[in-house]
Image (cartoon, rainbow over all chains, first blue to last red; front, side):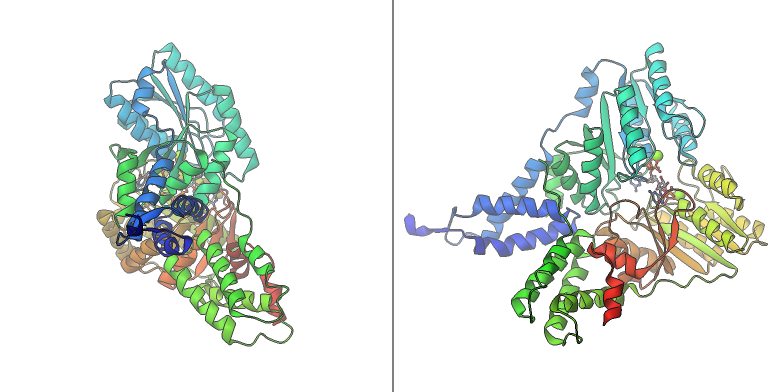
Length: 285
Length: 301
Ligand SMILES: Nc1nc2c(ncn2[C@@H]2O[C@H](COP(=O)(O)OP(=O)(O)OP(=O)(O)O)[C@@H](O)[C@H]2O)c(=O)[nH]1
Ligand SMILES: Nc1nc2c(ncn2[C@@H]2O[C@H](COP(=O)(O)OP(=O)(O)OP(=O)(O)O)[C@@H](O)[C@H]2O)c(=O)[nH]1
Ligand SMILES: [Mg+2]
Ligand SMILES: [Mg+2]
């Protein structure tokens, strides 16, 4: 039996790992995260044995898939179960950099909650961007829910406070709070976000980023998570033929679950994140 | 699971060359590998990076360094030249009457950049107006109208009309007396066939002089593919990179330029209408590579 097995060394592993890594980079997994994961797979496999004639490439792929699955299924939590058991009203704040899909994701989550028989009120907490209140307002009226708003330029924390009070007074199950997009490099806006989250102490803070994002996903997820910290993420625009490797980057750097994928611009275009499905489509290219 | 933050990897790598008196293959390979890392980390297209690093390797070994240039500077110079080859000098923006159409992926910054552009031309003494031809995204009309009113530039829109082509037609007539007419369109991606067709129809009606593709600095490997599709549909004549006030390096935009051969015209560095700059290739390359003052080094040669 002995001579039917050979040891795997660094050199055997390098080539197949490199090929797989290039594939992952093309799927928008950040380089730094990909290197860390590949390194751990290399360490794990080096010195193990394989049967003569078996394919090293396959062994490597299986191990890498497993390592990525571990990253994206760390701390998974079931959104639907969570909101069902949580004391009402449940308050959820959505945060992220500019234009990733926060407002649209709020409308999709609203739709999902309404379908489960819950009631929802929206807070127009983006008082900064031109047209932001109108945008959320149109979603609110299409979905038939109330939106609490103040004037453009008003204090977002005050709007959100009012929405939570409204929900308590009217026995509404959910408050979904929109916030302005902000760059993680903008100290004032990051401080404002911390204040919003401190004052309104939400049940969940959800970070919204887009699947088409590349390496920067790591930096901004880290900064937002450090500032508030976040409870989970939504990755939008996966329908743009994005493989969504950035989901791995974000899960890796925050250690928090990916909750949903945005798969289009309609209210139904929200897909519950499924780690197994995700890893399979990532490797089937 | 916090990871060690990666510094300016390239800068570190190139330091390895400082001491080296002459260029040997091992050192060049090592440095090229680090250049690859820097470019991949900046979101430059993977295939583009592989092709480019091969060329850099060959040139570094083959070409004689200019007199007075150490090996490190020699390699940087080649990297710089290769990037310059792709980026070119940036677009010439002519200060004359013209129609501009904004296109790009969802949320990339088209509407904001339309307002910034109007502001740019207004400051140069031209009369600028915008047309709200995004009938898809809720609130798009209000967003552009609010921005236009704040800037005191022309605005045309039809709230509630779902026909973007018709609005474009009406809008360009209504703004006939304006020097600069900027048509904002809905965000879309290559797989949204209906929306791509709508864009082509708007294009046919507007007959724009310029088609600016607006790209988020943070976009990853999708940039090439998307730019390719937009270019096939309407022909991109310029690129605007937004959100460079964050930490994204903009390598996706570089890949789009390589794909379309359209020059970069402007960059967005914030949310207000003033946060808009003419593109400068030197500064962009410095940022991409994570190192300062490349220009003076190039002048030394
Ligand atoms: N294709 C696609 N488009 C999406 C998705 N999610 C959001 N969008 C679009 O992306 C654009 C930006 O979405 P918003 O919801 O306004 O993004 P935001 O994060 O609220 O933006 P700011 O408030 O300006 O920071 C809109 O055109 C949305 O329709 C998605 O999953 N797929
Ligand atoms: N920080 C920063 N934010 C920007 C910049 N350019 C645009 N934004 C923000 O990015 C978000 C999206 O910008 P929009 O102009 O609405 O993008 P769009 O491409 O018109 O979006 P759709 O019409 O939904 O496709 C907004 O929050 C803008 O304020 C920039 O250069 N820097
Ligand atoms: Mg929003
Ligand atoms: Mg827009």
